[in-house]
Length: 210
Image (cartoon, rainbow, N blue to C red; front, side, top):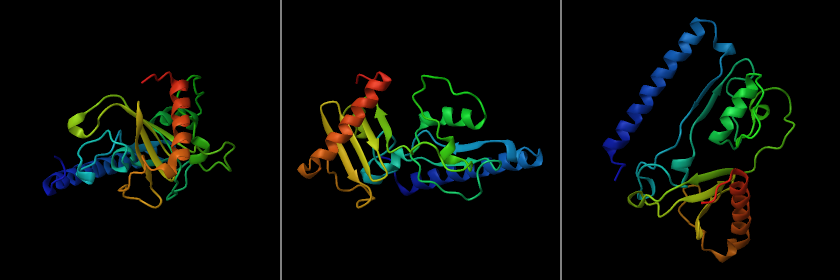
């Protein structure tokens, strides 16, 4: 298990150490007069359950595992203090950052260029993403993962399925702590079907065959 008071204290100590290191980096950029023209993206590859839901480590569809920091510093094109609820995936970082640097985005990438939604360059010309695709490829039984899974996250719902059945569905607007799993609730059949169609389409687009 992972999530004792000592574990949480160590986790926050690591966060504090990172905060200090980022502060040093930002001070150097200021000293070199590079801050306005340097893009700094602070994020993480995953979260950690840290005892939430009685679980440990990463790899689950819960918010503690899949929702990560997204802090973008670029004074030349982003106003300080701006906040956004834009749905962004890790695969979107590369095309977005290339575009912000004025570099052509190669064809065939799985991610999306979201720069016009993140920078202060007038109204965006494209629609915001409605979903973020989620995936994990293998079982980790001691971590509470019975098999590889695929899923989607919207601004209201998180849905994940195993290859042979729905697994988790949460209404994060009405159930922000994700305590009520609606995956087997008949009232949500149409919603599950729509999410399954989204997952199937994304898997077909990226050549993912379970």
